[in-house]
Length: 159
Image (cartoon, rainbow, N blue to C red; front, side, top):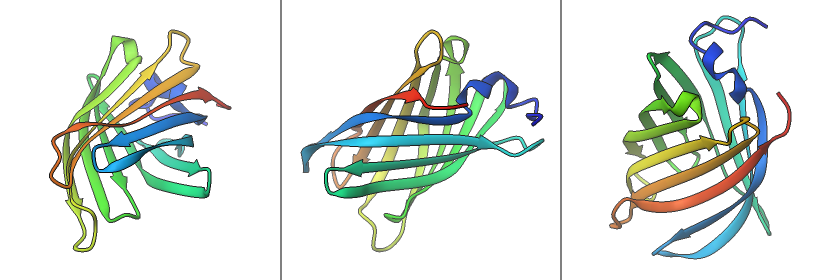
């Protein structure tokens, strides 16, 4: 498959990444989970499809889907929808030769019945050979300031 030119510098994302994570926040009890993140592409299209799934000891916990759009000069856009009633629009930048994808600017929209999330930040860091992905998710929600909520370490499963 031929990748769109905007995707070619990020071809290392393609495939599934899986591993373990942990969650914490002042308003909840700490927890552990397993996570899978998958990036796919359609021939010639200028975006990756993104999907995240997590499982805890009692079964499925969370999922989200969206699109990662490299828009030139290392600039990135990430659009995510969650079944908990939030959508995130994030702007970011690829740094350190693509080893760090940092999304520090977000707009979050909540449905009328969703837990209120004010802001988010996401950081994806790859090891030197791009075989391990460390994720960090920060959240400002339910009256709490922006702070770390989730961390995981995922290994590439296929490409």
